[in-house]
Image 1: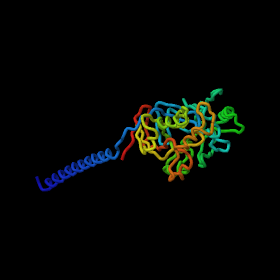
Image 2 (image 1 turned 180 degrees about the vertical axis):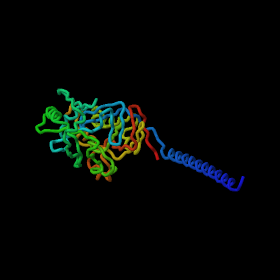
Image 3 (image 1 turned 90 degrees about the vertical axis):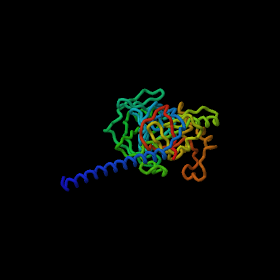
Image 4 (image 1 turned 45 degrees about the vertical axis):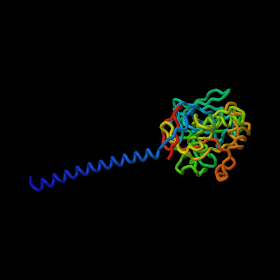
Length: 328
């Protein structure tokens, strides 16, 4: 064997050694990262998902579901996306249960590419989800701009008859290519890149059964979760424990708390009758659920009930899933 062969053999051995050393170092690095991640992401069981609600129509009847896909923008069940339909005036301003309490009795569902509108003493109306020949409307929601595809004259007429409205309303549908709403435009605590369709603020609102029971004991009346429009209801925790869950894991979903949900007149609309009383349970909430003085610039005089979350990791969750608080 000449010197060139010896040199080539030595070089090959050095390369193999370097490769093994590099691989070992990489594996050691992965082990250290994994251990560090596990150490950082300790979790504590805090409750169980007892109910999941989708609200396809803003201010419309809640749809209970057993399983939902939690997307970055909203929660989804089948063809129903949370708060992707909205009633507006002819000039595009949102109409909610605050102005038209009977909206809470309107049921909007989607199946097989068809939307169905139902309400007490009304014939069912069906129309296609996608009506690309209809115009896109510029809409206003809490002073911010958003767009919606008009759902047609038949839907407008149906709503007018049901609401006994003197003025004409339109039903609009949010589509992915339309201008979305940025919660940060009206509430700076939300991430600037967060976008939603028609919810008041964030894509997910969470509330515990114990908090509702605590309120019921003070009001002296059995109020249902639907009165407070949550997406996720949690059992197995104490009243208002959810206020302290900054980050939680539910099924395959990771949620990040942004802020408490400030409550308004809409909580005084009975979801079963569509009647607004303008007092309870809002007055009772104000008696013990106002924010701290240093947070008044955020919540003003609105009582706090429930928590608003963004979706840190999308996935699927279902009734019965254990809820874990992430501890760092």
